[in-house]
Length: 534
Image 1 (spheres, rainbow, N blue to C red):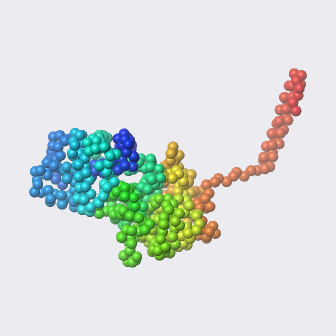
Image 2: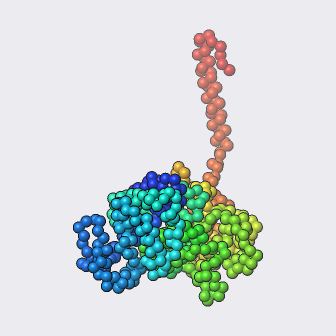
Image 3: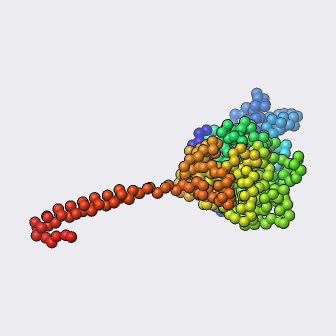
């Protein structure tokens, strides 16, 4: 399917969402739309695997209403358990015939009063029984008893019938391709985020910005000029939102290019979105681990080991934490193994707390890329001390300044910090990409050539006037460890040099011309007997 077709499907689904949500706010309706897309993906992917497994034993039906898998279940009751065990090994999950999207869509099409109950049962089954690992609470944010859906059971059932039927009609025009649904899912997340204001920053990183981070951490950490790593054993995002940034890295590395994906998310709704997003993009349940918790207090047992021999490290760390989040660190946190060598980020802005959390778990041969507000580059106090320590230890590799208005959650320009524990170069690369963008109505946009220029400059550590420069630690130290990008790479063009002698000659010539033309003009006036000028 072409990019245009994928975008068209996204638009169709987005229009359906706007048409059907009624009084329900966009955030609530988002969860219904995305959950049904998720169910359709699981179903389509499962049926493809079932057909392959059963081969010629897969029943052939003469209409689009009957369920071939249900027919097989009815005729092979003694083999169902063995079959499901086999599917769990091969596809990593099972869906009963009555919970497949096609069965549910048929109930919706016929306005069946059992639809709502069937959807509830399907969601519970997927959460607790489909996968080898239970996905507790995966649909916890979808309240099928909500009056926002309808005043009573009948009204709610009618609304679900309408939503599911419209989705089925919209999708049926396009090829039955699992990748298409993944792209549609991402498109809808972006559209819902665009109307979410500051809340959107909690779960969505614009794809173009995400691509910059993904391509950077995919390159060899010690010598990026050698190109992309063959494989990343692990990747971690401590504020993963809907998981789009992690999935972008997977896209760069290829489906088998990452050993395991790790993420943490505090918001329950976006935590569920992230888990669905992983599965919907073909990441198997044993290939990722998303934890619902708070990275700042480090409540994930996997990351709480202080013993160096038991501590987990990641080959790549990416993050887009909430900008300048207020937090309340306890006095005990100053002794936390993540912060004890640096000090605590101020209560007014947790930016460096998020950075230090991710950086602590970065492997010695890994790369970390994090999106932060520009303030981290120059603010004083506790942040200046952290910045100084990171610089003196040779951990800050590159500072990239991006244009303003790239994010839904803020109009301010942001930066990307690239960090490493063992970097080869002893300078810091500054890239000032603030003026390289395409202007949009509400937001500015990075084109492919803008992204390519940034990544190419990072990869080959290029220097270019008014765009990039390698700066020694000595120069940064003279600036009191201030990393404000414009101090080192100014985009201002030099004023042209003015030749005063040349200007004087031009003025003198102009005066001579004025006198000449005035004399000529007065001669005409004199002939006419009119008062002369001058």
